[in-house]
Length: 315
Ligand code: UDP
Ligand code: MG
Image 1 (cartoon, protein in one colour):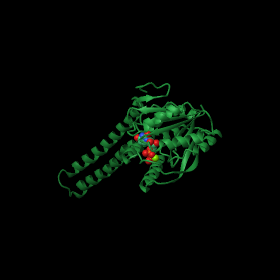
Image 2 (cartoon, rainbow, N blue to C red):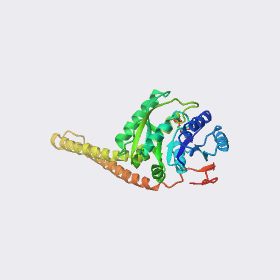
Image 3 (cartoon, helix red, strand yellow):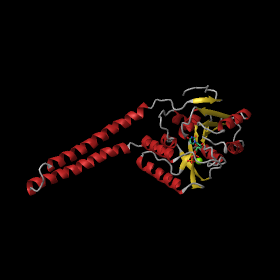
């Protein structure tokens, strides 16, 4: 198998027929040995039956049907897990990522790269607040974390089998594929493209989902938020220290304070500082425990035509 294309699908009935056509048109000139892995992430429209129809008439179409909506990242991950290609493409189903770009991505990969990102030069048809939040998010996460996640890239990219095997072997529950792929290293590069408008339907990424996604990205690649409590603890303790000196000065030198005020102030400030430091320390440990306990099955498959997946197979 030369190329696997992984496509997370959530209520994309309006896009699937054209997507399929354009993918096949792009892939055929590249190789005869490719597969399209559609992961149906609990769609409530006709997406699944469309996929089954495609699978019936084209054996290169594989589908994995989740038991419910597990989210875009896990859908992409499940596709990666069952991809058998030497090169694997992750692409959105809504035609925002032009399938024709796969030819360029594939050619660049063959020049000896392990990851080729499709980097957005321009994004059409998206609201200014989506663009702004996306821009801020990528800059923020690069500031916080040690891995350098390329700016303005989504999950549209091609990766080698080597990278896929690394990403698939990471068992963590909160997936942040673009971070994990960047983290894996090897030779990575990007090519620029113009992002299209969604062909049909509306975005499935609500602000609530985007917020959770952002938190997953930040907590997966940075313990900074937890460390914040520790820093705050030290700052408060420092302030408390000066406040203690000030209150003692007021009491013994100026003698102008109300009875009991100094002892109250000193103890409140001091205890506050100590508490924050303790919280921060607990947070540090919590982060490390979290890193290690993620053992729940990542997703549940209801139905599939992928050989190694039987019905109700729990991964
Ligand atoms: N998607 C998914 N599960 C979800 C939400 C989205 O599999 O819970 C898929 C969706 O079908 C599409 C891709 O993820 O192929 C990107 O979603 P969308 O276009 O809604 O996000 P946006 O481009 O607006 O960020
Ligand atoms: Mg989209």
